[in-house]
Length: 271
Image 1: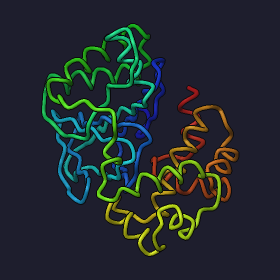
Image 2: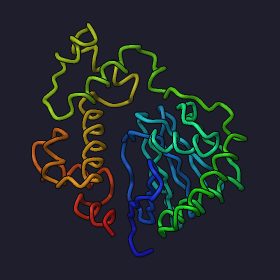
Image 3: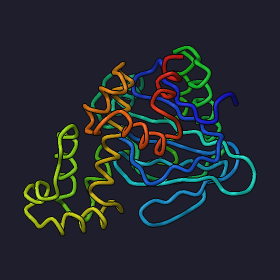
């Protein structure tokens, strides 16, 4: 492959692709939307909710928005990680193609399953996005894959797992974070929202998300900055609007999270 880490947009709404053939390890992170991912070469260790498993070719994993996870390649052999990032807009688009209307009832649960046919369909869709196939081809592949996914994932639902965390205050705190990403946020501020102590805020995040409040806030800001850049904002503006101190700060954490610099990311999206 020409690029070891490649992010590609799609002509379809709400879906983009990541292709990674390097040994880059994705540390603990989140996505604003769903991610459906697989490996077409080599195995992938992934950690989710405190448990580490291995995803091998032939298996697919789905992770809901806001769920903390990490993944890295197995040591032996090559590796080709393929991820499809799916926003709410995408699910509305699929539902409208299938039923003629968009009610927001289609959504995938967090799951891992093995199905060779669906795995091959996901690879074909991913490759079609990477190579820039025209809309009619992508739509056919999307409908083919997602109609068959119901066989393996019968529990299609609307609410993400973040809403069913053990502590009912966690979604409320995260919603506040999302609404104030460009501002300075303190533990005391979050504690007032949740009506508890600052110490308890840390416990809530460690238990529910597996990372500190600040680490989770950084992940939210990174996803926001990436969305700003997708809309054509400069790196400097995306950094400031998302709550980073400056462009160099965003450059450091972005490269660590996504495997390439913001400048390289923008260049890929424009190509």
